[in-house]
Image 1 (cartoon, helix red, strand yellow):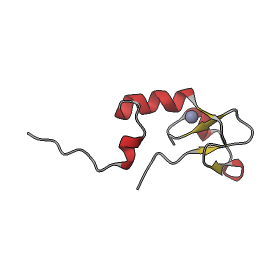
Image 2 (cartoon, rainbow, N blue to C red; image 1 turned 30 degrees about the vertical axis):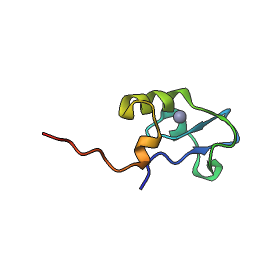
Image 3 (cartoon, rainbow, N blue to C red; image 1 turned 120 degrees about the vertical axis):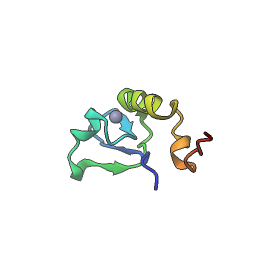
Length: 69
Ligand SMILES: [Zn+2]
């Protein structure tokens, strides 16, 4: 349901939350770990989130907002 599942690689100093992140896409499947690993959020993922939903990852987990026309 959520597309904001955190993942990281022990090789990197940051964790990712956006599958569209260029740095996240360079990771090999076998080195991916679920969660944040206690690492800071990747700046590129933060920027992607800001563009998509105002920078609040929590919004991704909520019901889509109904548009009143
Ligand atoms: Zn990232």
